[in-house]
Length: 89
Image 1: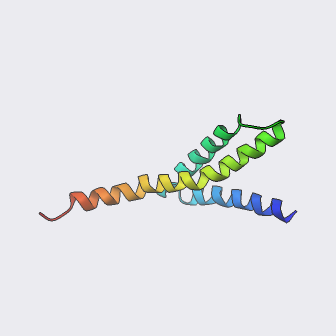
Image 2 (image 1 turned 30 degrees about the horizontal axis):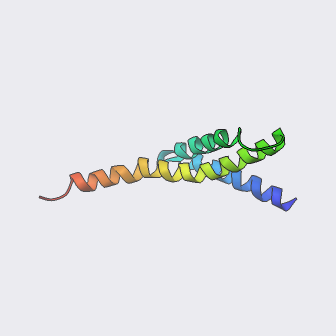
Image 3 (image 1 turned 120 degrees about the horizontal axis):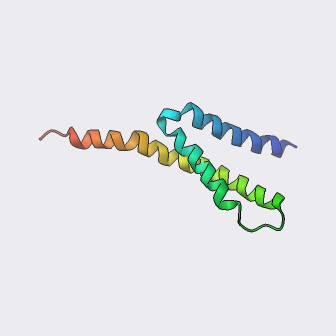
């Protein structure tokens, strides 16, 4: 029972983190979660319960990876471009 509470809490926490950090790449986290879900859905599995479980794991893996990539795109690249373009000559 506690395992289910923790896995649902981790999933809800990642979604909440993506929503709170929307301006800092949170949209990338939601896109990554959706892509992870869709990529793992047609994979190995004898029945739909197992396939949905695999898709859930794909979403759990895609959320933080998408959040990191979205954060780099939204925050890291503009800061890097400002540092390079504003360099003294």
